Amino acid sequence: MRVAEVVGRVLYGHGARHVFGVVGSGNFHVTNALVAAGARFVAAAHEGGAASMADGYARTAGTVGLLSVHQGPGVTNALTGLTEAAKSRTPMVVLAPEATAPLSNFFIDLPALAAAVGADFHRVRATHAAEDAGAAYRAAARGATVVLGLPLEVQQATEPWSGPVPAAAPAPVTAPHVEPLLAALQASRRPVFIAGRGARSAREPLIRLADACGALLAVSAAAKGLFAGNPWNLDVAGGFATPLTAELIGGADLVVAWGSTLNMWTTRHGELIPPDAVVVQVDRDPTAFGVNRPVDLTVAGGVATVAEALLARLGVDSTGPAGATTGGWRTPELAQRIRDHGRWRTVPYRDESAPARAGAPATIDPRTLSTALDDLLPSDRTVVVDSGNFMGYPSMWLDVPDVAGFCFTQAFQSVGLGLASALGAAVARPDRLTVAAVGDGGFVMSATELVTAVRLALPLLVVIYDDAAYGAEVHHFGPDGHPLETVTFPETDLAAIAGGYGCDGLTVRTVDDLEPARHWLAGPRTRPLVIDAKVSAARGSWWLEEAFRGH
Image (tube, rainbow, N blue to C red; front, side, top):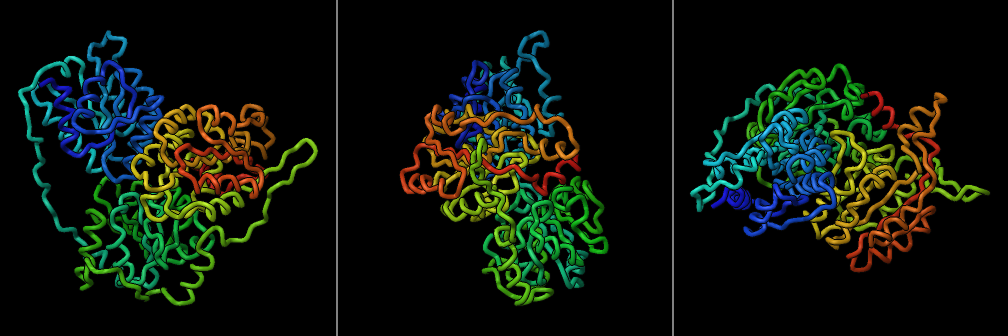
Protein backbone atom coordinates (compact mmCIF):
# COMPACT_ATOMS: atom_id res chain seq x y z
CA MET A 1 0.00 0.00 0.00
CA ARG A 2 1.34 3.46 -0.83
CA VAL A 3 2.27 5.66 2.11
CA ALA A 4 -0.30 8.33 1.17
CA GLU A 5 -3.04 5.72 1.46
CA VAL A 6 -1.66 4.38 4.73
CA VAL A 7 -1.70 7.87 6.24
CA GLY A 8 -5.31 8.48 5.21
CA ARG A 9 -6.51 5.13 6.53
CA VAL A 10 -4.66 5.50 9.82
CA LEU A 11 -6.03 8.99 10.45
CA TYR A 12 -9.54 7.73 9.75
CA GLY A 13 -8.93 4.78 12.04
CA HIS A 14 -8.01 7.16 14.85
CA GLY A 15 -11.28 9.06 14.46
CA ALA A 16 -10.86 11.62 11.67
CA ARG A 17 -14.27 12.03 10.05
CA HIS A 18 -14.02 15.45 8.38
CA VAL A 19 -11.16 16.99 6.44
CA PHE A 20 -11.13 20.55 5.09
CA GLY A 21 -8.87 21.79 2.36
CA VAL A 22 -8.01 22.68 -1.20
CA VAL A 23 -6.68 19.77 -3.23
CA GLY A 24 -3.63 19.94 -5.46
CA SER A 25 -1.21 17.38 -6.74
CA GLY A 26 0.68 17.02 -3.47
CA ASN A 27 -2.31 16.19 -1.27
CA PHE A 28 -4.51 14.51 -3.89
CA HIS A 29 -3.84 10.90 -2.90
CA VAL A 30 -3.87 11.30 0.88
CA THR A 31 -7.14 13.24 0.71
CA ASN A 32 -8.74 10.61 -1.49
CA ALA A 33 -7.52 7.91 0.88
CA LEU A 34 -9.37 9.63 3.72
CA VAL A 35 -12.51 9.86 1.59
CA ALA A 36 -12.22 6.22 0.55
CA ALA A 37 -11.95 5.23 4.20
CA GLY A 38 -15.19 7.09 4.99
CA ALA A 39 -14.23 10.67 5.87
CA ARG A 40 -16.09 13.67 4.46
CA PHE A 41 -14.02 16.17 2.49
CA VAL A 42 -15.14 19.81 2.60
CA ALA A 43 -13.65 21.76 -0.28
CA ALA A 44 -12.91 25.39 0.59
CA ALA A 45 -12.41 28.25 -1.83
CA HIS A 46 -9.01 29.14 -0.35
CA GLU A 47 -6.54 27.41 1.95
CA GLY A 48 -6.84 30.27 4.45
CA GLY A 49 -10.56 29.56 4.72
CA ALA A 50 -9.94 25.82 4.93
CA ALA A 51 -7.58 26.30 7.89
CA SER A 52 -10.17 28.35 9.77
CA MET A 53 -12.87 25.81 8.93
CA ALA A 54 -10.79 23.00 10.42
CA ASP A 55 -10.13 25.18 13.47
CA GLY A 56 -13.81 26.07 13.96
CA TYR A 57 -14.83 22.46 13.43
CA ALA A 58 -12.38 21.14 16.02
CA ARG A 59 -13.39 23.71 18.65
CA THR A 60 -17.10 23.10 18.18
CA ALA A 61 -17.00 19.32 17.78
CA GLY A 62 -14.47 18.83 20.57
CA THR A 63 -12.40 16.51 18.39
CA VAL A 64 -9.39 16.67 16.09
CA GLY A 65 -9.79 18.73 12.92
CA LEU A 66 -7.95 17.89 9.70
CA LEU A 67 -6.62 20.35 7.14
CA SER A 68 -5.30 19.14 3.77
CA VAL A 69 -3.33 21.53 1.55
CA HIS A 70 -0.96 21.55 -1.41
CA GLN A 71 2.80 21.82 -0.88
CA GLY A 72 4.45 25.25 -0.76
CA PRO A 73 1.84 27.96 -1.42
CA GLY A 74 -0.97 25.76 -0.12
CA VAL A 75 0.77 25.74 3.25
CA THR A 76 1.63 29.43 3.26
CA ASN A 77 -1.89 30.40 2.18
CA ALA A 78 -3.15 28.61 5.30
CA LEU A 79 -0.59 30.16 7.62
CA THR A 80 -2.74 32.77 9.40
CA GLY A 81 -5.48 30.28 10.21
CA LEU A 82 -2.85 27.76 11.25
CA THR A 83 -1.31 30.32 13.59
CA GLU A 84 -4.67 31.10 15.19
CA ALA A 85 -5.22 27.38 15.76
CA ALA A 86 -1.76 26.84 17.23
CA LYS A 87 -2.06 29.80 19.60
CA SER A 88 -5.48 28.51 20.65
CA ARG A 89 -4.13 24.99 21.20
CA THR A 90 -6.76 23.68 18.81
CA PRO A 91 -6.49 19.91 18.26
CA MET A 92 -5.72 19.86 14.56
CA VAL A 93 -3.54 17.95 12.07
CA VAL A 94 -2.31 19.78 8.99
CA LEU A 95 -1.52 17.42 6.12
CA ALA A 96 1.38 19.33 4.60
CA PRO A 97 3.07 17.80 1.53
CA GLU A 98 6.78 18.55 1.41
CA ALA A 99 9.04 19.26 -1.52
CA THR A 100 12.27 18.37 0.24
CA ALA A 101 14.73 19.43 -2.47
CA PRO A 102 15.98 22.92 -1.47
CA LEU A 103 16.04 24.07 -5.13
CA SER A 104 12.41 23.11 -5.70
CA ASN A 105 10.14 26.12 -6.22
CA PHE A 106 7.78 24.49 -3.69
CA PHE A 107 10.41 24.14 -0.97
CA ILE A 108 9.77 25.74 2.42
CA ASP A 109 11.30 24.86 5.76
CA LEU A 110 8.27 23.21 7.31
CA PRO A 111 9.79 22.45 10.73
CA ALA A 112 10.86 26.07 11.07
CA LEU A 113 7.48 27.32 9.90
CA ALA A 114 5.68 25.15 12.47
CA ALA A 115 8.02 26.26 15.24
CA ALA A 116 7.58 29.91 14.29
CA VAL A 117 3.82 29.82 14.94
CA GLY A 118 3.85 27.48 17.94
CA ALA A 119 2.70 24.30 16.18
CA ASP A 120 4.21 20.86 16.62
CA PHE A 121 5.95 19.23 13.69
CA HIS A 122 5.89 15.55 12.78
CA ARG A 123 7.13 13.92 9.58
CA VAL A 124 6.02 10.69 7.94
CA ARG A 125 8.78 8.19 7.17
CA ALA A 126 8.62 5.64 4.37
CA THR A 127 8.86 2.59 6.62
CA HIS A 128 6.95 3.92 9.61
CA ALA A 129 4.01 5.74 8.02
CA ALA A 130 1.29 4.16 10.15
CA GLU A 131 3.23 4.79 13.33
CA ASP A 132 4.02 8.41 12.40
CA ALA A 133 0.48 9.29 11.32
CA GLY A 134 -0.94 7.79 14.50
CA ALA A 135 1.54 9.70 16.66
CA ALA A 136 0.60 12.96 14.96
CA TYR A 137 -3.12 12.38 15.53
CA ARG A 138 -2.60 11.47 19.19
CA ALA A 139 -0.47 14.58 19.74
CA ALA A 140 -3.28 16.69 18.30
CA ALA A 141 -5.85 14.94 20.47
CA ARG A 142 -3.83 15.97 23.52
CA GLY A 143 -4.33 19.61 22.55
CA ALA A 144 -1.77 20.58 19.91
CA THR A 145 -1.87 21.83 16.36
CA VAL A 146 0.37 19.46 14.44
CA VAL A 147 1.94 20.06 11.03
CA LEU A 148 2.43 16.60 9.53
CA GLY A 149 5.10 16.72 6.85
CA LEU A 150 4.39 14.38 3.93
CA PRO A 151 7.49 14.32 1.69
CA LEU A 152 6.35 13.88 -1.91
CA GLU A 153 8.73 11.02 -2.59
CA VAL A 154 7.74 9.25 0.63
CA GLN A 155 4.04 9.44 -0.24
CA GLN A 156 4.68 7.36 -3.35
CA ALA A 157 6.70 4.71 -1.49
CA THR A 158 5.06 1.47 -0.43
CA GLU A 159 4.65 0.17 3.08
CA PRO A 160 3.64 -3.41 3.84
CA TRP A 161 0.76 -2.41 6.11
CA SER A 162 -2.81 -3.62 6.11
CA GLY A 163 -3.88 -2.74 9.62
CA PRO A 164 -4.85 -2.61 12.39
CA VAL A 165 -4.43 1.04 13.34
CA PRO A 166 -1.56 1.22 15.86
CA ALA A 167 -2.75 2.14 19.32
CA ALA A 168 -0.93 4.33 21.80
CA ALA A 169 0.37 2.99 25.07
CA PRO A 170 -1.81 4.23 27.95
CA ALA A 171 -0.43 7.35 29.51
CA PRO A 172 0.70 6.99 33.12
CA VAL A 173 -1.76 8.48 35.60
CA THR A 174 -0.26 10.61 38.33
CA ALA A 175 -2.40 11.78 41.21
CA PRO A 176 -2.28 15.59 41.44
CA HIS A 177 -0.91 17.22 44.57
CA VAL A 178 -3.95 19.16 45.75
CA GLU A 179 -3.37 19.69 49.48
CA PRO A 180 -2.13 23.31 49.24
CA LEU A 181 -5.07 24.27 47.02
CA LEU A 182 -7.46 22.45 49.35
CA ALA A 183 -6.13 24.48 52.28
CA ALA A 184 -6.51 27.71 50.27
CA LEU A 185 -10.12 26.87 49.41
CA GLN A 186 -10.94 26.04 53.01
CA ALA A 187 -9.42 29.30 54.23
CA SER A 188 -11.13 31.48 51.61
CA ARG A 189 -14.26 33.51 52.30
CA ARG A 190 -14.68 35.02 48.84
CA PRO A 191 -13.36 32.54 46.24
CA VAL A 192 -13.76 33.01 42.48
CA PHE A 193 -13.07 30.38 39.83
CA ILE A 194 -11.96 31.63 36.41
CA ALA A 195 -12.12 28.83 33.87
CA GLY A 196 -10.29 29.05 30.57
CA ARG A 197 -9.89 27.07 27.37
CA GLY A 198 -8.26 24.19 29.26
CA ALA A 199 -11.40 23.72 31.38
CA ARG A 200 -13.89 23.33 28.54
CA SER A 201 -14.60 19.67 29.37
CA ALA A 202 -14.75 20.13 33.15
CA ARG A 203 -18.06 21.92 33.70
CA GLU A 204 -19.66 19.49 36.15
CA PRO A 205 -16.73 18.85 38.54
CA LEU A 206 -15.98 22.59 38.66
CA ILE A 207 -19.61 23.44 39.47
CA ARG A 208 -19.71 20.79 42.20
CA LEU A 209 -16.46 22.08 43.66
CA ALA A 210 -17.68 25.68 43.52
CA ASP A 211 -20.86 24.62 45.31
CA ALA A 212 -18.81 22.86 47.97
CA CYS A 213 -16.70 25.94 48.77
CA GLY A 214 -19.09 28.77 47.92
CA ALA A 215 -17.15 30.07 44.91
CA LEU A 216 -18.46 32.32 42.17
CA LEU A 217 -17.87 31.21 38.59
CA ALA A 218 -16.35 33.18 35.72
CA VAL A 219 -14.68 32.32 32.43
CA SER A 220 -12.17 33.69 29.97
CA ALA A 221 -13.68 34.75 26.66
CA ALA A 222 -12.51 31.51 25.03
CA ALA A 223 -14.62 29.49 27.49
CA LYS A 224 -17.83 31.55 27.33
CA GLY A 225 -20.86 29.36 27.87
CA LEU A 226 -19.09 26.86 30.14
CA PHE A 227 -21.28 27.75 33.12
CA ALA A 228 -24.36 28.85 31.18
CA GLY A 229 -27.51 28.51 33.26
CA ASN A 230 -25.73 28.38 36.62
CA PRO A 231 -27.06 30.99 39.08
CA TRP A 232 -23.53 31.90 40.23
CA ASN A 233 -22.16 32.41 36.73
CA LEU A 234 -20.56 35.85 36.29
CA ASP A 235 -19.86 35.15 32.60
CA VAL A 236 -16.68 36.57 31.05
CA ALA A 237 -13.92 38.11 33.13
CA GLY A 238 -11.57 40.79 31.82
CA GLY A 239 -12.20 43.40 29.16
CA PHE A 240 -15.70 42.07 28.43
CA ALA A 241 -16.73 41.87 32.09
CA THR A 242 -19.93 43.57 33.20
CA PRO A 243 -19.57 46.18 35.95
CA LEU A 244 -20.97 43.65 38.43
CA THR A 245 -18.50 40.95 37.36
CA ALA A 246 -15.59 43.37 37.68
CA GLU A 247 -16.81 44.43 41.13
CA LEU A 248 -17.14 40.87 42.43
CA ILE A 249 -13.83 39.59 41.06
CA GLY A 250 -12.26 42.73 42.49
CA GLY A 251 -13.52 41.66 45.92
CA ALA A 252 -12.20 38.10 45.81
CA ASP A 253 -9.70 36.85 48.37
CA LEU A 254 -8.87 33.74 46.29
CA VAL A 255 -8.82 33.44 42.49
CA VAL A 256 -8.32 29.98 41.01
CA ALA A 257 -7.50 29.90 37.29
CA TRP A 258 -8.60 26.58 35.84
CA GLY A 259 -6.96 25.96 32.46
CA SER A 260 -6.47 29.70 32.00
CA THR A 261 -3.17 31.55 31.77
CA LEU A 262 -4.78 34.77 33.10
CA ASN A 263 -3.62 36.79 30.14
CA MET A 264 -3.98 40.55 29.88
CA TRP A 265 -7.47 40.26 28.36
CA THR A 266 -8.80 38.07 31.17
CA THR A 267 -7.33 40.24 33.92
CA ARG A 268 -7.58 43.72 32.33
CA HIS A 269 -3.80 43.97 32.35
CA GLY A 270 -3.72 42.72 35.93
CA GLU A 271 -6.11 45.37 37.26
CA LEU A 272 -9.13 43.07 37.70
CA ILE A 273 -7.67 40.78 40.39
CA PRO A 274 -7.08 42.53 43.73
CA PRO A 275 -3.41 42.67 44.78
CA ASP A 276 -4.06 40.96 48.12
CA ALA A 277 -5.91 37.97 46.61
CA VAL A 278 -4.26 34.56 46.59
CA VAL A 279 -3.93 33.49 42.94
CA VAL A 280 -3.76 29.81 41.98
CA GLN A 281 -3.19 28.34 38.55
CA VAL A 282 -4.27 24.80 37.61
CA ASP A 283 -3.06 23.49 34.26
CA ARG A 284 -1.96 20.21 32.75
CA ASP A 285 0.95 22.06 31.12
CA PRO A 286 3.47 23.25 33.73
CA THR A 287 5.09 25.57 31.19
CA ALA A 288 1.92 27.66 31.35
CA PHE A 289 2.44 28.54 35.00
CA GLY A 290 3.07 32.22 35.59
CA VAL A 291 3.52 33.08 31.91
CA ASN A 292 1.32 36.17 32.12
CA ARG A 293 1.43 37.15 35.80
CA PRO A 294 2.90 35.91 39.08
CA VAL A 295 0.85 33.28 40.87
CA ASP A 296 1.01 32.16 44.49
CA LEU A 297 0.31 28.48 43.97
CA THR A 298 0.32 26.04 41.05
CA VAL A 299 -1.23 22.61 40.59
CA ALA A 300 -0.14 20.42 37.67
CA GLY A 301 -2.85 18.22 36.23
CA GLY A 302 -5.92 18.14 34.06
CA VAL A 303 -8.64 20.46 35.29
CA ALA A 304 -11.28 17.76 35.73
CA THR A 305 -8.77 15.45 37.46
CA VAL A 306 -7.72 18.13 39.94
CA ALA A 307 -11.31 19.18 40.65
CA GLU A 308 -12.38 15.59 41.23
CA ALA A 309 -9.42 14.97 43.54
CA LEU A 310 -10.46 18.00 45.59
CA LEU A 311 -14.06 16.79 45.71
CA ALA A 312 -12.86 13.44 46.99
CA ARG A 313 -10.82 15.12 49.74
CA LEU A 314 -13.90 17.15 50.69
CA GLY A 315 -16.07 14.04 50.74
CA VAL A 316 -18.31 15.32 47.93
CA ASP A 317 -19.78 12.93 45.36
CA SER A 318 -17.87 13.56 42.13
CA THR A 319 -20.44 11.90 39.88
CA GLY A 320 -23.81 13.02 41.20
CA PRO A 321 -25.79 16.05 40.02
CA ALA A 322 -24.40 19.46 40.83
CA GLY A 323 -25.89 20.89 43.98
CA ALA A 324 -27.25 24.35 44.62
CA THR A 325 -25.66 25.00 47.98
CA THR A 326 -24.66 28.41 49.26
CA GLY A 327 -21.69 29.40 51.33
CA GLY A 328 -18.80 31.78 51.32
CA TRP A 329 -20.23 34.95 49.86
CA ARG A 330 -23.13 33.23 48.16
CA THR A 331 -26.23 34.90 49.54
CA PRO A 332 -29.79 35.23 48.23
CA GLU A 333 -29.15 38.96 47.79
CA LEU A 334 -26.08 38.35 45.63
CA ALA A 335 -27.94 35.74 43.58
CA GLN A 336 -30.61 38.35 42.87
CA ARG A 337 -27.98 40.92 41.83
CA ILE A 338 -26.47 38.43 39.40
CA ARG A 339 -29.91 37.71 37.93
CA ASP A 340 -30.69 41.42 37.60
CA HIS A 341 -27.30 42.82 36.51
CA GLY A 342 -25.14 39.90 35.40
CA ARG A 343 -25.72 40.36 31.65
CA TRP A 344 -24.73 43.31 29.52
CA ARG A 345 -28.24 43.72 28.17
CA THR A 346 -29.40 44.58 31.70
CA VAL A 347 -26.87 47.44 31.98
CA PRO A 348 -28.56 50.76 31.01
CA TYR A 349 -27.18 52.67 28.05
CA ARG A 350 -28.16 55.60 25.83
CA ASP A 351 -29.27 54.30 22.45
CA GLU A 352 -27.07 55.95 19.81
CA SER A 353 -29.04 54.76 16.81
CA ALA A 354 -29.32 57.65 14.37
CA PRO A 355 -32.38 58.38 12.21
CA ALA A 356 -31.98 59.24 8.56
CA ARG A 357 -31.01 62.85 7.94
CA ALA A 358 -30.27 64.86 4.83
CA GLY A 359 -27.35 63.16 3.15
CA ALA A 360 -26.97 60.62 5.98
CA PRO A 361 -28.94 57.34 6.08
CA ALA A 362 -30.04 55.80 9.37
CA THR A 363 -27.73 53.67 11.49
CA ILE A 364 -28.41 51.30 14.37
CA ASP A 365 -26.61 51.18 17.72
CA PRO A 366 -24.70 47.85 17.80
CA ARG A 367 -26.00 47.21 21.33
CA THR A 368 -29.58 47.66 20.18
CA LEU A 369 -28.92 45.43 17.18
CA SER A 370 -27.35 42.71 19.33
CA THR A 371 -30.16 42.78 21.87
CA ALA A 372 -32.75 42.45 19.11
CA LEU A 373 -30.84 39.55 17.56
CA ASP A 374 -30.55 37.78 20.90
CA ASP A 375 -34.34 37.95 21.25
CA LEU A 376 -34.95 36.90 17.65
CA LEU A 377 -32.57 33.96 17.22
CA PRO A 378 -33.25 30.45 18.53
CA SER A 379 -31.48 29.66 21.79
CA ASP A 380 -29.92 26.55 20.24
CA ARG A 381 -27.12 28.40 18.46
CA THR A 382 -23.39 28.55 17.83
CA VAL A 383 -21.91 32.05 17.84
CA VAL A 384 -18.60 32.58 16.05
CA VAL A 385 -16.94 35.99 16.44
CA ASP A 386 -14.35 37.57 14.14
CA SER A 387 -11.86 40.19 15.33
CA GLY A 388 -12.40 43.93 15.24
CA ASN A 389 -13.82 46.94 17.02
CA PHE A 390 -17.30 45.36 16.98
CA MET A 391 -16.39 42.03 18.58
CA GLY A 392 -17.61 42.65 22.12
CA TYR A 393 -21.21 43.26 21.06
CA PRO A 394 -21.97 39.74 19.78
CA SER A 395 -19.66 38.23 22.38
CA MET A 396 -21.48 39.81 25.29
CA TRP A 397 -25.03 40.43 24.06
CA LEU A 398 -25.64 37.09 22.32
CA ASP A 399 -26.16 34.27 24.80
CA VAL A 400 -24.97 30.75 24.01
CA PRO A 401 -26.33 27.47 25.37
CA ASP A 402 -23.00 25.93 26.34
CA VAL A 403 -19.26 26.19 25.81
CA ALA A 404 -19.49 24.44 22.42
CA GLY A 405 -21.80 27.24 21.34
CA PHE A 406 -19.11 29.93 21.31
CA CYS A 407 -16.07 30.15 19.04
CA PHE A 408 -13.75 33.10 19.63
CA THR A 409 -11.05 33.58 16.99
CA GLN A 410 -8.88 36.00 18.94
CA ALA A 411 -5.67 34.20 19.87
CA PHE A 412 -3.77 35.82 16.98
CA GLN A 413 -6.09 38.84 16.73
CA SER A 414 -6.39 38.49 12.99
CA VAL A 415 -9.31 40.10 11.21
CA GLY A 416 -11.05 37.89 8.66
CA LEU A 417 -11.12 34.41 10.23
CA GLY A 418 -14.67 34.41 11.59
CA LEU A 419 -16.71 33.53 8.51
CA ALA A 420 -14.72 30.43 7.60
CA SER A 421 -14.48 29.36 11.25
CA ALA A 422 -18.28 29.54 11.35
CA LEU A 423 -18.50 27.18 8.38
CA GLY A 424 -16.40 24.63 10.24
CA ALA A 425 -18.59 25.08 13.31
CA ALA A 426 -21.71 24.58 11.19
CA VAL A 427 -20.32 21.31 9.80
CA ALA A 428 -19.67 20.17 13.38
CA ARG A 429 -23.16 21.12 14.62
CA PRO A 430 -25.65 21.18 11.73
CA ASP A 431 -28.44 20.79 14.29
CA ARG A 432 -27.82 24.35 15.51
CA LEU A 433 -28.06 27.73 13.84
CA THR A 434 -24.53 29.01 13.35
CA VAL A 435 -24.16 32.78 13.65
CA ALA A 436 -21.04 34.38 12.20
CA ALA A 437 -20.53 37.86 13.67
CA VAL A 438 -18.05 39.83 11.58
CA GLY A 439 -17.06 43.40 10.82
CA ASP A 440 -17.25 44.83 7.33
CA GLY A 441 -13.46 44.61 6.99
CA GLY A 442 -13.36 40.95 7.97
CA PHE A 443 -16.33 40.16 5.76
CA VAL A 444 -14.72 41.65 2.66
CA MET A 445 -11.50 39.74 3.39
CA SER A 446 -13.30 36.40 3.62
CA ALA A 447 -16.40 36.75 1.43
CA THR A 448 -15.01 34.23 -1.06
CA GLU A 449 -16.01 31.45 1.33
CA LEU A 450 -19.68 32.34 0.80
CA VAL A 451 -19.28 30.06 -2.22
CA THR A 452 -18.52 27.25 0.21
CA ALA A 453 -21.41 28.25 2.47
CA VAL A 454 -23.88 28.06 -0.41
CA ARG A 455 -22.46 24.74 -1.55
CA LEU A 456 -22.81 23.24 1.93
CA ALA A 457 -26.42 24.48 2.36
CA LEU A 458 -25.97 24.62 6.13
CA PRO A 459 -28.02 26.82 8.50
CA LEU A 460 -25.78 29.90 8.60
CA LEU A 461 -26.53 33.50 9.53
CA VAL A 462 -23.82 36.09 8.87
CA VAL A 463 -24.22 39.38 10.73
CA ILE A 464 -21.96 42.20 9.52
CA TYR A 465 -21.41 45.03 11.99
CA ASP A 466 -20.80 47.51 9.18
CA ASP A 467 -19.32 50.89 10.12
CA ALA A 468 -17.65 51.42 6.71
CA ALA A 469 -14.22 51.51 8.35
CA TYR A 470 -11.57 49.67 10.25
CA GLY A 471 -13.28 50.95 13.38
CA ALA A 472 -10.54 50.07 15.83
CA GLU A 473 -8.08 52.35 14.05
CA VAL A 474 -10.67 55.11 13.59
CA HIS A 475 -11.47 55.28 17.28
CA HIS A 476 -7.90 54.82 18.45
CA PHE A 477 -6.21 57.37 16.19
CA GLY A 478 -9.08 59.74 15.37
CA PRO A 479 -9.25 61.54 18.75
CA ASP A 480 -5.63 62.62 18.32
CA GLY A 481 -6.37 64.28 14.99
CA HIS A 482 -4.63 61.76 12.75
CA PRO A 483 -5.90 61.49 9.14
CA LEU A 484 -8.28 58.57 8.71
CA GLU A 485 -8.62 58.29 4.93
CA THR A 486 -6.62 55.05 4.93
CA VAL A 487 -9.06 53.30 7.28
CA THR A 488 -12.47 54.62 6.15
CA PHE A 489 -14.39 53.53 3.09
CA PRO A 490 -17.47 54.48 1.06
CA GLU A 491 -20.67 52.80 2.15
CA THR A 492 -21.00 49.50 0.25
CA ASP A 493 -24.05 47.31 -0.33
CA LEU A 494 -22.65 44.17 1.22
CA ALA A 495 -26.05 42.46 1.16
CA ALA A 496 -26.04 42.74 -2.63
CA ILE A 497 -22.54 41.28 -2.77
CA ALA A 498 -23.74 38.35 -0.66
CA GLY A 499 -26.63 37.89 -3.06
CA GLY A 500 -24.18 37.56 -5.90
CA TYR A 501 -22.66 34.55 -4.15
CA GLY A 502 -26.10 32.92 -3.88
CA CYS A 503 -26.98 33.97 -0.33
CA ASP A 504 -30.05 35.82 0.87
CA GLY A 505 -29.10 39.39 1.72
CA LEU A 506 -30.70 41.92 4.06
CA THR A 507 -29.71 45.49 4.90
CA VAL A 508 -30.59 46.60 8.45
CA ARG A 509 -30.66 50.19 9.71
CA THR A 510 -33.40 49.86 12.34
CA VAL A 511 -34.78 47.06 14.51
CA ASP A 512 -37.85 46.90 12.26
CA ASP A 513 -35.58 46.05 9.32
CA LEU A 514 -34.90 42.68 10.98
CA GLU A 515 -38.42 41.42 10.28
CA PRO A 516 -37.44 39.51 7.09
CA ALA A 517 -34.90 37.60 9.18
CA ARG A 518 -37.78 36.21 11.22
CA HIS A 519 -39.24 34.69 8.06
CA TRP A 520 -35.84 33.27 7.08
CA LEU A 521 -35.51 31.67 10.51
CA ALA A 522 -38.90 30.03 10.13
CA GLY A 523 -37.98 28.53 6.75
CA PRO A 524 -35.68 25.71 5.68
CA ARG A 525 -32.56 27.90 6.17
CA THR A 526 -30.70 26.12 3.39
CA ARG A 527 -29.48 29.39 1.85
CA PRO A 528 -27.22 31.45 4.11
CA LEU A 529 -28.64 34.80 5.20
CA VAL A 530 -26.22 37.74 5.30
CA ILE A 531 -27.37 40.77 7.32
CA ASP A 532 -25.52 43.96 6.47
CA ALA A 533 -26.20 45.98 9.63
CA LYS A 534 -25.26 49.63 9.19
CA VAL A 535 -24.13 50.35 12.74
CA SER A 536 -23.53 53.70 14.35
CA ALA A 537 -19.88 54.56 14.76
CA ALA A 538 -20.12 57.35 17.29
CA ARG A 539 -17.87 55.75 19.87
CA GLY A 540 -15.11 53.23 20.24
CA SER A 541 -15.70 50.19 22.38
CA TRP A 542 -14.34 49.93 25.89
CA TRP A 543 -12.39 46.80 24.97
CA LEU A 544 -10.66 48.70 22.18
CA GLU A 545 -8.26 50.45 24.51
CA GLU A 546 -7.55 47.11 26.16
CA ALA A 547 -6.46 45.77 22.79
CA PHE A 548 -4.22 48.70 21.92
CA ARG A 549 -2.62 48.66 25.35
CA GLY A 550 -1.46 45.15 24.51
CA HIS A 551 0.33 46.17 21.29
